[in-house]
Structure formats: C-alpha cells, structure tokens
Length: 287
Image (cartoon, rainbow, N blue to C red; front, side, top):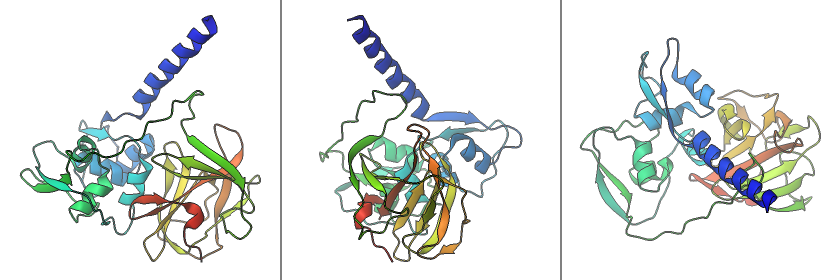
C-alpha cells in the first residue's frame, strides 16, 4: 500500500511538472536578445514565436518587452516553416472578430484549432499580422469533434505513446538501413527507427531544406519539403550535413543518427506531413 501511494504521488507530481514545463509562458526581453536567440532558448521555431505574439520575423523587439512563449507543437512548427501554409480544411465555420490582444496562436488555442488550420480557413500565410476588428473564420464549436485521451506517462519524462514494433519491409526505403520500426501514436504521429551508431541518415524524397534546429522533445530536426509540398521531418539527427535552403537529392546524406536521451539507443524519429497533417510515413512517396 505504501509503495502504491508513492507511485501515485510520483505520477501526480510528474503530471504537474509536465504541465508547467510544456504550458505557455512569458519572457521579458533582455538586452541583446533577438527572436532567433529566444526561439533557441525555448527550443521552438521563430515562426511559432512570431505567431504567438502577432509579429513578423522582421519585427524589432525591445528590452523589457514581454513575449508569449507558446507550447511546443511539432504540427504547428511544420506548417509554419513551409513555403505554403495555405492548406485545405473542410469544416463547418463561424465568424470571429479580432479584439485587442489577440494573436493567431491565442485564437486558435481558444477554439481548439491549430494555427495551421486557422491560416488555412482564412487563406492566410505564416507571416500574417492580424488587426483589431478583422473578421476570421473559425471552427464552429457547436459541432462536436472527437477528442483524444492523452496517455498517462509512468516513467518521466517519456510522454511518447508507442504502438507496435516491426522489422522494416525490405521493399520500403527508410532514412536508415533495415531499421526496426516503432509507431508513435497521438497528435504527433510518426515512427521511431532503430539505427546503428552514427549511421548515415539519408533523404528519401528530394526537396528543399526548410528548417534546421533543435526542437523541444525531438532533438535536432530537419524539415525537407518536396516539390509536391509534402514535408519530411527527420528528428534526433546529429552531425547535420545540409543547411537551410539546400536542395537535397534522394539518397543524399543529411546527417547521422543520434542517441535518444531517454532510451539511450541509437535511433531517429521520422514524420511526414501533408497539408499540415501527419500521414503514415510508410506510405509517403519516395523517389
């Protein structure tokens, strides 16, 4: 009974701590800060930081200014770091009038939407600055939508929701050779791929490197956008061999497999996004 009580207390403390770490927060700009340096400090993208504060990446921030630091969301990060965040969304909508203090991020969050969905509904791009009185389409909250029940973590701080593990089909090309494939379920779905120590990670679909950086919970990530607009996200990569803006060809080495900070194993996480939503990486187009 005593051990059970300790476990229960531990789980409660972990949930509280997780909520604190990953909840929105605020930051007071210090002398010498830039949007880029602040985004690196909190391991999110500049685009997410701008969206949460209704500014653009050209905005000059001032010492003492308060900025909202949004909760990290890999889906939003992908959608806001592409050439075209205008995706197709087919839902019942209503109209919202922007008031003082609103941001795209705050409006999306209040209405159970992603920033990517809000941009798509209104045919806006990631650099949009909204104004008081502006009319925006939002999801009609009177329409019931399915919700996911988050998995309760039993071992801090690994909150990933795992599915089954299988040996890769030899006919499917993956960023690493002959991996064991473990599905990741939930809002940020994808796969974890086992790898040899320092194994080469290669591009499986040619395209343009849209983003490189450390992202909260995923280590160093690389987003490659194909000519058809699909985003291939390689995460947990070491020794990056490409830079933002590069056009990478199929089979090109983009880095090496890193060591997962939780499991201690050599592996990468791989996700693919189409129109701002994750798709099955095994079925994503290859070259």
